[in-house]
Image (cartoon, rainbow, N blue to C red; front, side):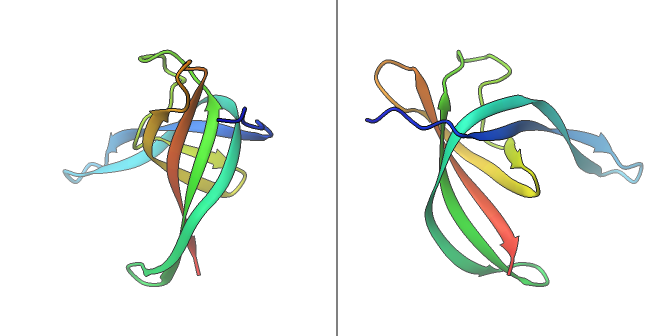
Length: 112
């Protein structure tokens, strides 16, 4: 494996569930910190959202590893934000045998 080119700043965010007062909840996003990453597109497709068509693109995001259990180690259901772009994390795997890098498989959905 080649060494990733960590040239993009992404903000790692964690979902926080807040009661909405009607028996349900709303989700707000708490920033955990900024990480440098390499972002590369994998595949894309058009899907139908609830009211509008969506463009869904899969991304591979590589970054320096953090120890398991560390708050800055990405997890599924968290997300990366870069400006107005949002990458929802679906899976996190060790990138190499030395454990120096992680690969996050993420989805970005955009209204088409």
